Amino acid sequence: QVQLVESGGGLVQAGGSLRLSCAASGRTSNSYTMGWFRQAPGKEREFVAGIRWSYGSTYYASSVKGRFTISGDNAKNTVYLQMNSLKPEDTAVYYCAAKRGLGDYDITYTYDYWGQGTQVTVSS
Image 1 (cartoon, one colour):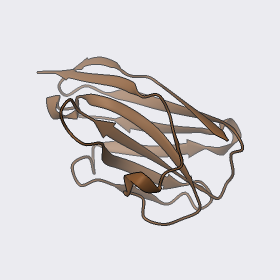
Image 2: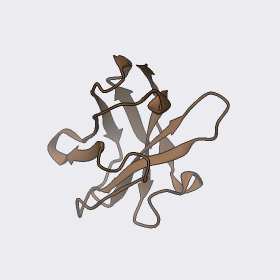
Image 3: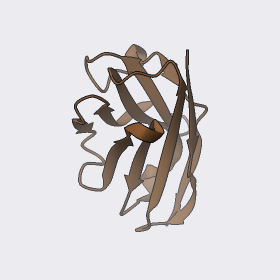
Image 4: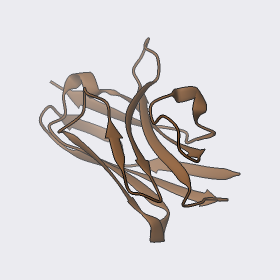
């Protein structure tokens, strides 16, 4: 089992920045793929960004590319999502997720473990 705990959400004005953290514990492995997803009220959960622990390679949704950066600290078993130039449409609950091995970053149902989510609200 892997436990994921997100933190760092909050209220920010449009154009501002936030950094989310996802601390992983339990049976973690460098072979995992980590992802950030978000879900706004009345909408489906959508992919935001992903990273391969072992390779450091990253992938982003087109809606956040150039504004968000995903990174990982293997020593701390923590994944970060730096969010800059935030927009009101970025308002959502943000979830951290993990899955064994490779495969597509952005397929929600392929992830094995999920955190409880952290609220991000961007005011206009």
